[in-house]
Every structure is written in structure tokens, then in C-alpha cells.
Length: 459
Image (cartoon, rainbow, N blue to C red; front, side):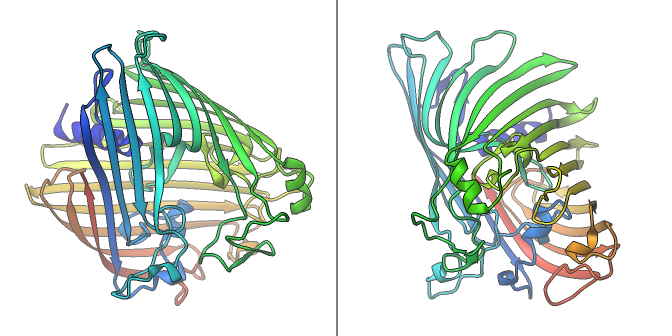
């Protein structure tokens, strides 16, 4: 396995849990891990939401669309191994970001320090859970956990969008001594939908109700996902992971009254298969996933959180993705990602407010050439297509719209592998669309070129 594969595996593990495991025991003592994403889009006003929405909707990828200039994460873990063979760990993840926990827009802060008047999110606790393993009353390899967690997260390497996770508060059990698989688990995770997604913080009106205000007429509606998963089954030269999620909603009758929609979903089913191996038979690594979701799970089938609330009972989605990194030579590596997302509304209803069907496709490649240990050239080339039931409802010239982007970056880094971090990356991005009237920003239509600098660090 080349260095990039080792780094990639470490990155995936850190993003999923922030914990380094040694066999079935935890690393003793305190650990601090983290991530930082710092972005400056030169001359762009992030208040106008000119970056993140394109990535979120699978229309583009690259530094110019990575959104938040202020994302800072810290994961603090306390691990202990005991003489009786049991172990424990406490995981606390904090993040300074903004709306959607760092995945949203953000603003450029100033020396006044009062960034809160511009955005709703500040320093937040994203994970806080306790896990106990190998207790004497359970079989060897069994652990139990309780708390707030990002459970079984997976995200694309270019789009950076999470397509699998259960994000919320809950409890679960895992067993890691199956022999034929890496682990088997069951978890129950709950998340409150609350009063809608707020773009500019409390005070904005969403669906006629004020964001951030909870009253008897505007109560939260708790979603619960019951997850069953079996991971790491060897086959076809790689490993298979299987997920099944059954989801329910509390106060569903009241929700239907509040929304004036008798078809608002009160349950859902999601399922997915993930296959990981080398880069499709070549040197490197790849991950392929396909999911199905209906009702509450219609977002992407296996992606559960407080964003699952606004679906009808018979809405459904099919989601497919495949991504990875190819080691072409010692100095040349190629990242790639493919996405297809097919959403269909319940008969007579709409998804995303006004469309009976939405189909999104994305393909992107990221060539990376290592010039020295501290410098590499990176490119990002993407093509995306979005097909709507009626494009005119979204101001489109046609029902089918294509999007094109190209980014070139000189990358200054301490480790010039594909996932080498920390790094500082100036970039220039060109973006265009088959729809001459498509707005990449609020101030212009059609093709556009942007400049900026992005910094990232994992530790």
C-alpha cells in the first residue's frame, strides 16, 4: 500500500470518529485531533451565498465552492484500558463554524469579534459520547455507547457532501469479533427538526414562523432512526458494508396540521450497500455506494439528521456514488468522483418546493502532480447535469441544465501527497453553464472566473 492509501485510510477514520484505535483497545490517555478550513474568495461577498449552494446541489466542486471560511474543529478523546480487560473512551468534538455546522456560508470576521450578529452558529458541541468496551458481562469485542454522535459518516472526496451518517443523540451497541466481518451494530439516533433552516440566524421568517423561536404553536418534531449495519465483509477483491435504517417521526399528526399537508411523512425506510477496494483493479483505493430511501429517508436513504423532516410519505430517492484516488506514478495521482441522485415526489406533490422530479449527475477528476516534497500542482475538472420536471419554475431556460468548472492551483504544503496536509492553495476557477442566464453569483450571470486562497489542516 502506497503512502497515499495509508493517509487516506487515516483521514477517513479521523473524520468518522476522531479516534485512533489499536486493535480492539483504545489509545491510552488524552488525544487532540482536529480540522481547519480557511477560505478567502477574493472580491466575493459570502453574505450573498455565492459558493456553498453550488456544491451542496452537486453542480460544482473545488476550492471556490467549499463554502465556509471559518471552519475549525477540535476532537478531544480520553481513552483508558483497564486490568480487567475492559476499556472506555470519551469523545468530545467542538466546531466553530456557522449554519449547518461549518458546511454553510460563513462571513469574513473582523477585529470587533462580534461575529454572532452575522450568523447563527458559533462554537458548538458536535459530538459528545461515552463508549465502553469488553465489559465482563458481554462477549469479547462488544462495546456500548451513548451520547451525541456522527455515526458511520461517509463523504465524497471532491463534493465533500455526506451521503451516509446518522447525526443526532442516541445509543448503540457494536460487536467486532464476528470473524467473517469487521463489525456488526445496532443504534437508535434521534434528531429534532425544530422550526426550519435559518439562513441568517434568528429573526428570519421561514414558513411564516420566526427562526430560533420555539413556542406551543411551533414545537420541535423529533425524528428517530433505528440503524442496523454489518460492515467489512470480504468479497470480490474488497469489502462490503450493509446499512438498513427504519425511521419514525414524533408528533406527526400535529406536523401535518401545522404544514397543512396530510401526506407529510411520519416514517421512512433507507438502505445502502458500500463497496471498497483498490482503484477499480489499479493501484490506489476506491469506495462505491448505492442507497435507496423513502418517506423520511428520501433525502439520500442513509443520510439521517435534522434535515430529514420536510418529506412526504411516498417521496423516494436513489443515490449512487463512486470515488477514490489512483496512484498513476510516484509523483502523479488522480482523484475522481461520480454521483447520480434521482429524487421523485409523491404523486401530486413536489420535492424542494416545486419539482415533481429532480435528477442530478456529477463527475469530477482531480489530477495532482508532486513537484517536490513541499509543492504540487492540482487541477479540478467537473461536469454536472440537473434535470427538472419544469426548469422554468427555477428560472431555467431548459428542463436540463449542464454545469462546467475548471480549477488550477499551485499547492504549498509540508507533504505533497494527494491528502498531504497542512497546505495553502491559491486557485483560479472558471465556471460556466449551458444556461446563459444561470447565476453563479448574485451580481452576474453566465460564465465567471474567481480567484482565492484556501488553507486546510488535519491533525
